[in-house]
Length: 313
Image (tube, rainbow, N blue to C red):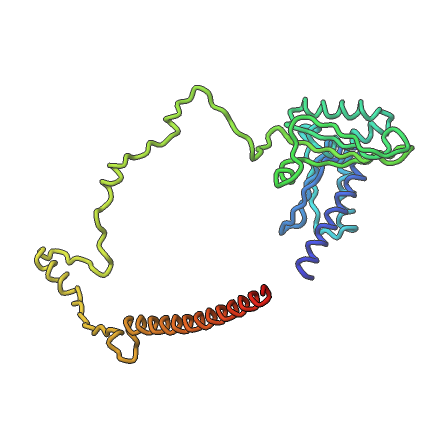
């Protein structure tokens, strides 16, 4: 069997055993169980408000429970241990069963909810919450909540610290679900803090070293890994060794070639002369064109004057 399938089978078996104890030990105040696999068999620890009713006269009930676990649930050599709940008002499963029984006996849901949560807080709980869902007063279902103190709803504290219990009240109008959450008085929440009064702060604050002390404790220069000074060598020998270790720098002379010495590359003077020649040619062409246009205009004007004089005559 695969590991995933084995986990599913173990969880299903644990749930079925828990439901069996809830039905069999409801009157004894069943408060939960713990199952542990041991080399000698399966160790089961039952928590109950009335351990005497769980054991029965002469151990009759406990033997019956052991036989049922061995035959119906295929547990190897089950060993059942019964423990009494120290404070029933701080056990969520016992409180949920009590509240469900009170509703079935005819208690009004508000009175039952407030009375139950007050008893939880009087027992020393840090916080509690009761949720009733169903047809509590009429034909229409709704949800009623009762809160006191501090309660966690999500995260690791909600799973590890908060005690959760569920009960069911069967009424004439329908079934009412009862959910109870309790934070026990000895719970250590991650956001807890303490305030100390009349305490000298200097006892809890470390004095920082001064800047001069920090600088005095640091060496001026750390020797490199490749240059480790020899022990016992005189300073002159160390200086000679440093000079020998330093490689001589090679000086490479490169000839600088002037780009303008190349006859194929035009110089700046040649470029300027070419630009001047182009400008002069352009100016000559413009002057010739301008003179030709001016002469044409003069001829046209003369012709117009002659025509005008002829008309006047």
